[in-house]
Length: 92
Image 1 (tube, helix red, strand yellow):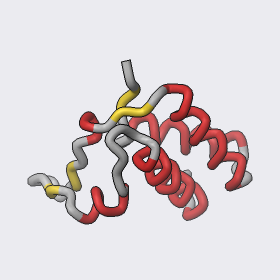
Image 2: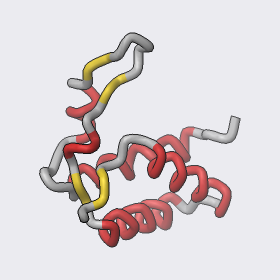
Image 3: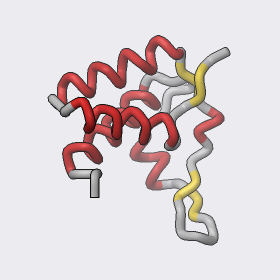
Image 4: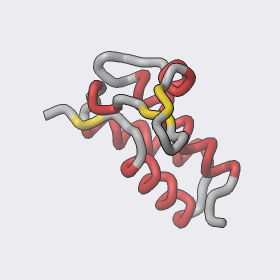
């Protein structure tokens, strides 16, 4: 499996910071804890209700990737996972 604890921690930290800097701001852990669970057992987070500037989004991702000292391959996994996951949408 490509995902490691280090990668999962980086992804989670990205979500925490993205929601902290979104409009409206949100506590990602609280969103996860209070999320509705669908029929497949997945937690549903209404990520389309939160917006972040594209510039801020990339600043946050790059800062966390630098902090975590990930390899180029690991960075790609984190970037793709966050982009395809439940991150806030970009402001128009």
